[in-house]
Image 1 (tube, one colour):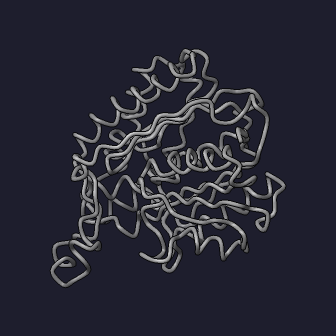
Image 2: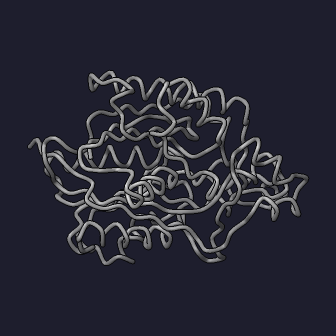
Length: 327
């Protein structure tokens, strides 16, 4: 088998509740000007109590399925990129499978933080290419607000909730995934993590008192690594494809921080008009970041048949990578 796939549909969803910079200024010592200057973020979305990653993914998936003119019962594969599943077990993918009624689909989660969607996309492409399924749903969704410390101004200004999804189906040889590079460096796991809640520090009075169940981040080091590694991965992907940055029609970087995005764009020397940014509206939505942006780009007419779309991301793990698509 040596099949190819196309992205037949895209979809996204964000919660209705908006948390503005002004709202955060009433929680911690910050201001709209301070946040905007350092991050480029103006607002972010927050899931309601009881609203988890799978439910957001459900709404995003329905939109993607509708655009793809595909029914959930016809899905063979569901791969769900998330670090905030509804439960430790079962997987968020299994919850989503049940909600959609995709009874015949293989369903599992991928934990690669902000790079989760890219990891999931590459795995799904490999399964489709090997003939293990004709239709796949790839999701990136996270509810980081549930793990954000709103007394820590260095992190609470960054994160928001949301979900994005794409439907893959077998397609032409000249479309789909052209090239990809994915990487991990576990030696730097401490730069961005949630220390409490796992098997090393399970929930207990002590972990709660030390606020170990919230996101911890070394922002300066993350910035340094994010820029270099995303640029390197993007350049390697283009080199593998025998292409130049000028051949890219649209670049969608992980929406983490405007300074990171600007530095990546500057180092890649790509035309700013070819870069899609929606960071100001949603903040860093982790694995949902790229599929939300991709869906918005598609629906705004920024992507057309034959376009080369470059995706690049970076996240906890550390994980990072880039994917080049032919639309």
